[in-house]
Image 1 (cartoon, rainbow, N blue to C red):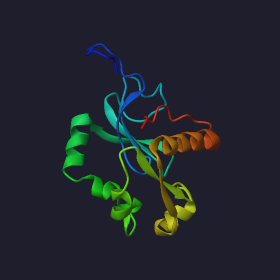
Image 2: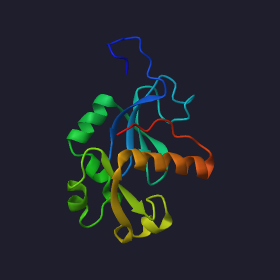
Image 3: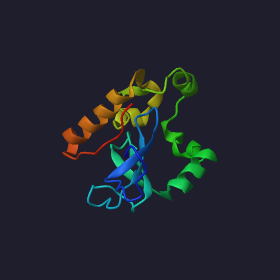
Length: 149
């Protein structure tokens, strides 16, 4: 973001607007998402899913997305990524931490039994870096900037 407001400032590939403790990232698409290899249209909020290692279009702009978050829409969104005791594990994290899973969220083992995974708090930057590295190793794609913490 520019230091002072500039209405002509381009977003580039996009602007990170939120991160979750799983290493998921919500971003606002820039003017040309196809050129950046991202789904959705310009100005649409997209989600980098740590369980799929890729971007997903959410079909909403920032205002609609924020309204969805504030009205509790995320409960269903995260339903398959919650386990017994998740609230207690997440409540002790600070704003710069996320949860690292082993086996990772994108693995068949984690999808079969999320509760059986081991989890530990790690710096968010480490978690995001691991996702980026995994994307590049598996299919050679670069998810782009996932934010910093």
